[in-house]
Length: 631
Image 1 (cartoon, helix red, strand yellow):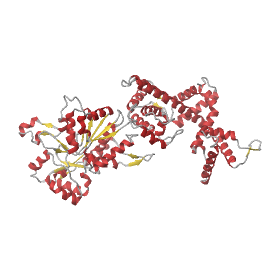
Image 2 (spheres, one colour):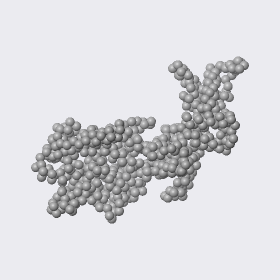
Image 3 (tube, one colour):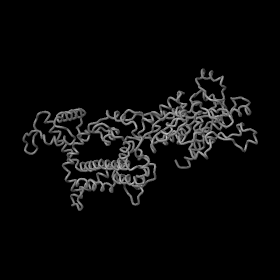
Image 4 (cartoon, one colour):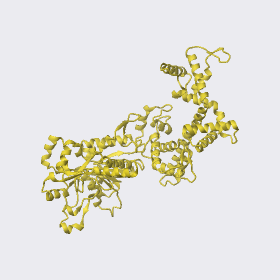
């Protein structure tokens, strides 16, 4: 489909939304689909749930509405959806302001932005269709035209709940233009849009001396007072405040706690009474979700202010800490870099992982558990068992550190430093070492860092570097093992033959002398010791291997060392240990001979073809590992 066809399709879709009719026509639609008349909280809840709910690796809920943009905040999103679920049922929590509190760059604004963008798309769909009284500045629910006295009957007969009163503008139009005949009032379909100020409002605090409350609640149109003769005439008032235009949708109050008190007082009435006090008019009903976000310091100052107790009581607080899961942190940077226009610069494998590792370490709190390092904690949080600890320890660790994730390095800082490294002149590829260097260099520009924090982060850079050193050696190890695949298979088969003989108390036949010999205990232990199998545990480990062989054989297959994770690790480590001197000489020789050069080229090709390296970072990796092995 070319551009012109796409534009025509777009116009056709926009045109299909332009439904118009009378209130009588709208009532027929509501009878068929009562969901058209749902309130704001219910609309947002249905929007989230209609996108689907999956299940994560640990059994946690994954809301697909958020999963492309928000990573590692399952607990936060659970609380958010729980709030909307309760509010959708018209429980008391819907009369509260939703406040997201957390460190900078943690995802608060992203969550609100997703809800706003989601509402724009959802209200364009058939399932999320919204209808309003035509010409109403507050996009009012047409069912408000039904008199209060008739509503109990409507609810009893049709199951349709009606809440709210007509705004002053619609009251005047109904009375003067339609003689009180509600069924004749014009109704149209609308789609929420922040740009056109329909159903979505955003308020940002500025200088309290110059900012006017009219930005929230609208203002008198002085140019029309002479024409209409009174400030209380709805035609002489602009119902264009952010609270007015956000009716039936969502209102984002950016950094609410930085606002002057006079702006907060208006929220008291809106939250508890669902009404706006506007100019010379009585209370005007408003059905909207009010969301705000702030940081921890601002919130603590707000809580300490006794004058703000009334507003504090009308707030639902949801903490939005930094992500603490390594795999999700990597996804954050993959998303941000993927959204950029970056081209022709290769990002070496593990670069984003190493940057993410440093970021997560900076957010973790030291545990009182003996032997629990920050690196072990990081791995446990990411679903990986470590020496002496397993996933059953995670909950205890989390309960021990209730503020964990509220401090540390933000994703914003990391992506800024990665961006700096990526755009350096002449850069064709950045490696994990380049990423760590960029993060470290940025400390000098980080004006808010105290000396103690800087020292802490420098130590974490060193700890992350040590972890990468081990990763780099393993990466080269895998590449060398891959290049000597036949050697790995031979070692594996030899090990299995000896294990079978050991278990059956049998002897092996020497392939050269054809003499019967005892199982090679030295060979078996040299493999098992690579993965920490002790002398006491060797018998159980070998029996487990035999059970696995039998299970595979029943399916008519043969056990492959690559299908047994622990055995695979043992074989690779053993083979690499045997090849260590070869690797050391091959990677560190400045003028390799033809045989060494062939080995280097084979390993480089393996790194490029099988592990995602380019020739630049593959050669850098070999040089780096050679330096490590020569220490």
